[in-house]
Image (cartoon, rainbow, N blue to C red; front, side, top):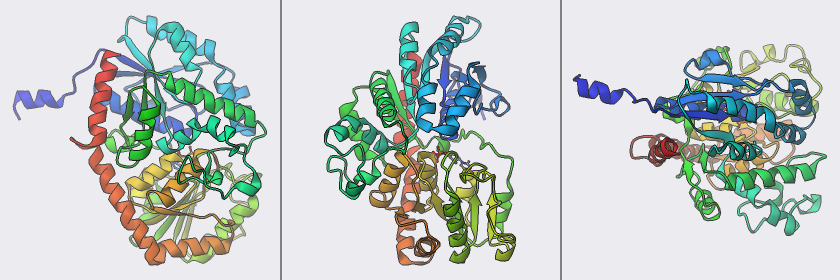
Length: 456
Ligand code: UDP
């Protein structure tokens, strides 16, 4: 190899620093760190500002600097355990601590000059902080564009009477947002509905007011929603996902690789992988129906039961004694799985998911069809798109009873319907692979983003 080609392989350093501020929830932290890895690999230096709750592990990112905001952890943790909306409202109350940290970072002349703050969209208060420091603010929205459009339509939905939800209208179509029905709108069961509307409105308004908007999505997947977004939002928009396909993946927070060796023992496409993400909770009775539904489906299953998943239970104590032993190795339960590796494993045939955006995108990227059981907010919209737009999964809409679960698994694992979903999923997988390669839509958009960040 001559000197010129060696040189072209070494990424030039860009004398600019990007400050990232992730929301302290797994589904928001992972994509933001993946994005930080991508731009770091293109030459930027990176500082991650974070709270004490769910801190990232600096050992996994020796190439970043980290900066902790020391503030009100117990208060934040307590509200997280009681109500998600109050928790998110409280997180938006950190104006002064963030400002002090940013002031120090901006003034630090021993490091590269700060180009901008990259803020999670839900941290709407960062607009004011950035304004006071005359620092550009770029937003990362970690969900899909399809659900963001539904959030952006909240004023209209309220005005037209779709919201607040009414039990007797749930099946009605929302004609302004096809193919959504009222029951697919991205709301959450909270005693503080007004706080929810306020939070959503602020998130949308402050995203509109930002200097740019980054998406962990890709043009081919969300062509129509992205086109609509461009009409309504007059800011630069960068759809550069799937982030984890850019070869700069952030590690999953687990040391447990037992799921992979367990998967190795099974036939191709024979296993149902079950996970409801990092926050969703289910009732004790639902947990038992899931267990018996999986047991009676006759297919091997890998199930993530996160401590805290079952309301009122520690972990697996509700399962009858000998439940797993009775299945003769057909079931494997873990507290957390390396999901990207699991979905990429040839033995996985179906993903039963709550349709968080990351899980949805990760499943699409591996061509794995989904059984959808959304729990709250954008998951409803994602599930509707999975089943009715991309047609790569089926929504388990009926009661979470063992009979319905068994039926859904059989349909996807054994019947022609499941085969068709898989064929379409594989086509999306190919699109996801192509879009991050030179000449692909996300690859090209990433080049534009890098240019934009270099001059912001
Ligand atoms: N995840 C994982 N192992 C698990 C469960 C989840 O690595 O056992 C990861 C998953 O790959 C995804 C994230 O956690 O990247 C969950 O994000 P998502 O948006 O799907 O759902 P949320 O947790 O925000 O509801």
